Image (cartoon, rainbow, N blue to C red; front, side, top):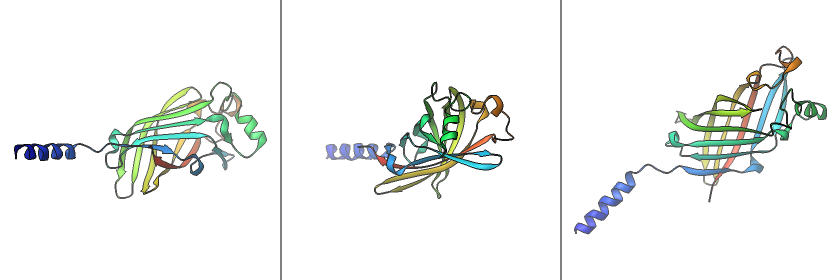
Length: 188
């Protein structure tokens, strides 16, 4: 009888332990990372064709989560060969010296539990510069995976995006909207 009582006590203790966060991996074919600058107050959209997202996340206990995003900067496409050639240069993304951008967050918070809204606060490294960035996202889970989507603003000048004659913000606006929709599956 004592053994049975000990077994129940052990099971009760294990059941009270916090749930483990799941490891999530991006489904590249069903994920998208877009950006939109403004040229003379007109949207100038683009997309990063190659990026990866890894997430360690429990929507019930987001505080222990981690979000890591890597972006192959040279995969930027603004649908114009001339613009794509220009953004590759040192005044813009400088593909030759800065081939990758990264976002790393170990601070994920729930903003609105009912709506599935969260906020990941972390460091964005772009063109060799690091800045703290807040990335709000909506989380929706289904039996076959999950989706995180959101939008946030990046100020381009602190990262040295648009230097020289492009530093002024009257032609190219100071803010770039970043929009994402990432499809995730639990890692095996």
